[in-house]
Image (tube, rainbow, N blue to C red; front, side, top):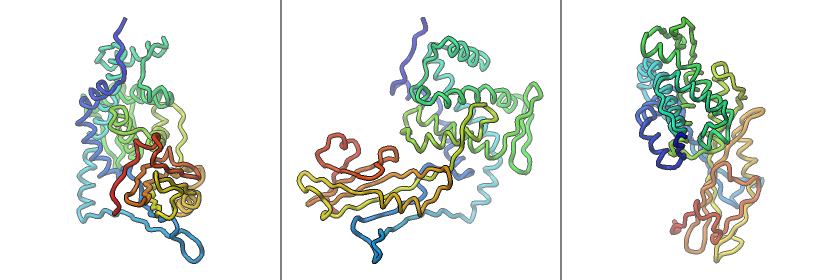
Length: 329
């Protein structure tokens, strides 16, 4: 009976060490060349009680702009690494595939053997997958079918070099069976980000969130012609909110407590950051509440932001993991 390994922190660290270089390389490449990043688009600051003459919330919005006189030259240089990025993203995916098979007691390093054992384990119902794959079986299925589809062109890139890049940036790869894969720029960007985000989550370096999961599903929607699993792309946007709560809005001072209606803030953000029909706006909150002699700071990722009322209590043990206390500024 094969020894099955658990997906515990030590085993995830093994994956992190295996794919460290490819992740570093691709995170730089995708940020500089594809303009990808998972940070919020902007930071909007509200202070409870600060309104204009019409009773509307006053806000301050911070946008970050990055400009460079050499940006085009950098882009032109990075464009030469499209094929390297594709091969590195596949190596990331291959590292994950090997890691999952090792968790099932397998030690097969030929690509055909990896896929054969995956098919056998899946058919027998004994495949031991990471919990992230169990929660999202469509992502798991797309992962393996994408691996199956891209292995022949990956081999062509490494061993035969039968490829060309057309003026649009599309990569055309001819594999050993003379099948041609046309990998356009949109698919390249989707594949690189999918590999980076998924590996980061599985390594334990990225905390899985509804926003990252939506990005992964959007990327897989772009790649559907390759893996054949149905995903629907939707417009998404990520915004950060910093909310100051002056002491006069405390419902209790010792231990501190407040009860804030987030509905006006959510409405303001939806109007100022439209995402279009069928889209979703992801909001993260940093709540800074003023007490008599200190401030309470509560971080709220998108999946735990309440729809309407936010109740903050200093003595609530459930809040402790994301609650910080600091001296008043």
